[in-house]
Amino acid sequence: MSAADRADVVRRARELLGRTIVGHGVTVRITEVEAYGGSEDPASHAFTRTPRSEIMYGPPYRLYVYRSYGIHLCANVVTGPSEIGAAVLLRAGEVVDGHDLARLRRGTPPGRDVQLARGPGNLAQALGITLDDLDTDLLAAHGDDGDSGFTGVRLGPEVRTRRRIASGPRVGVSKSVDVPWRFWLEGDPTVSAYRRSPRAPAT
DNA sequence: CCAAAGATCGTG
DNA sequence: ACGATCTTTGGG
Image (tube, rainbow, N blue to C red):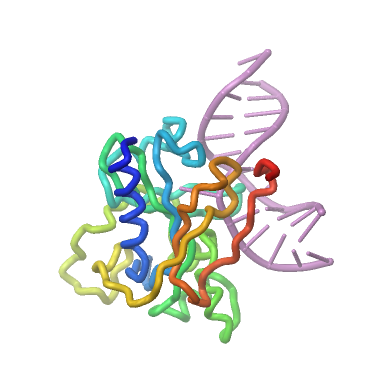
C-alpha cells in the first residue's frame, strides 16, 4: 500500500463522519470511525488474505461484516481501491431516525438514546445488520418505493460537517498501537470511550 | 484435528 | 477485572 493509498483510506474515513447510514429502518449519523490499511496494516483483517478478508480486496463501498468475540457484529465500509484491502470500521453514531426500532433492538430504555449506537457492536445491532448484509452495495440506488419501507443498508449523501475532527489510536488493537487512525467528531456524546487492548505491548 | 485469539460489551 | 460465546485461522 502506497503513501497515496494510506492518505486515501484516511480521507475516506474522515469523509464518513457526519454522514448517515440507514440500516433496516434505523438511520444513524456516523460520529466515530477507524481506518484500516489493508495488507500492510498488521491490525487489519486484510493483513492476512483469507476467505473472510477477501471482500476487503473487492470493490469499494461494500459492507464488510464480521463477528467479534463470538458475540457482536461489526460493520465496515470497504474503501478500495480493489486489491488494496482498505476498510473503515464504523464505531459509533447518533440515531436520527427509527428510535423506537433501535431501542427495541438494543433493549435500552428511553432516555439512554446516546448509547443506542455507541461502540461498533452496538452500532451494528441498532442498524439491524447481520451477516446476511455482508457485501451489500452501500451506494446502490433505492427501489422506486421511496425511502419509507426500505429494508436494506445504504449510506446517505456526503456531508460537510461543521464539527472539528479529533484523532487518536484505535481501540482494542494489539498491533500498531501508535497509529492514530481513529477519528471522531470532537465533543460528540455518542463517541465511545477509548480502551487500549489488554494484549497491547507495554510501553 | 485442536487450540488460541479476537477491530466487544456489560457488570462487578 | 472478568466472563460470555463462536468463528476464523494457523499449527501439528
